[in-house]
Length: 122
Length: 107
Image (cartoon, rainbow over all chains, first blue to last red; front, side, top):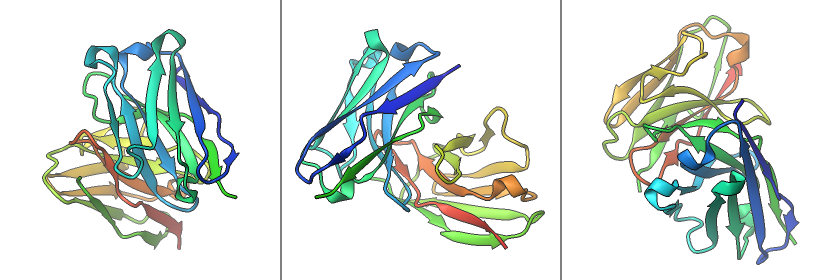
């Protein structure tokens, strides 16, 4: 059974940093692109960024709203995805989901984690 | 970046109603369009991918259509468990984007 479990969400002050983790199981993690998606309270889903697989040299993509403040990385040996967030702003407050991209077509998310809440507030 | 515009932002409907939600892309995305259902406090669930392909296990009352810039999600006969928020997602470019969501509420 595919499982994605996020962790690391917390209350952090504006300007602070936080690292989220996503532990994957039930599939060959190294085969898949993996993304982060967030959802601010009462708002819609927002794509945050991507880590491609080894075959694509672990390249990354980021949304314009977070580019320069976040870094996505992965450790295939631990089947884990990470989201390092720096210079946090109040508008970064959201539930952060990790999501698996379907292999082969790489065109849609087929599995999601349950999310972890990040609150940026003084 | 491609912008996705969904309409309506919310709607009220009754059980048994036919419901249609539209999603418009700011440029041609061919059929790189997916639909997700999200219930309160839960992660999104894939309904439709590649504009019209039903995800395994999703009821056949859900269908998708469209090409290029205009797409539609249709629920042929709304069921009680379908009251939720529906979001489109374009995956044509390296930077993906969601529509703002459509909340389907009980009339």
